Amino acid sequence: MTVSLRLSEEDEKLFKDYAKNNNITLSELIRRAVYEMIEDEYDLQVYREALAEYEKDPVSYTHEEVGRMLGLK
Image (cartoon, rainbow, N blue to C red; front, side, top):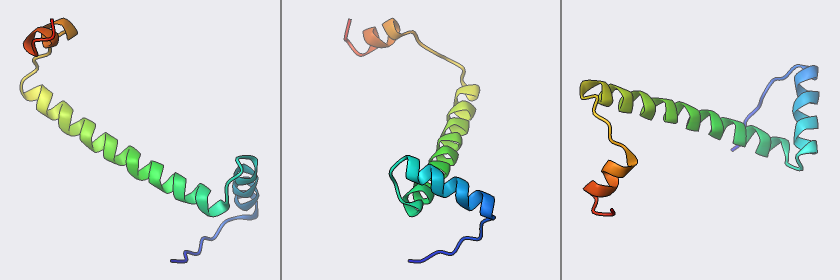
């Protein structure tokens, strides 16, 4: 798949210089940035869901308590 991207000359130079300094192609730089953005949004969604679940029943355990519950101590 081919994707076109319009950049200012300043942004183009910045992106190309960054890619060159990190020994990656411009395509790889953009691919990594997009993947990271998607991952960050997913992580935030999972965090919000976990927080909402915790707020319904705010019980927490220490590492020692969990170890005993699992029969590790």
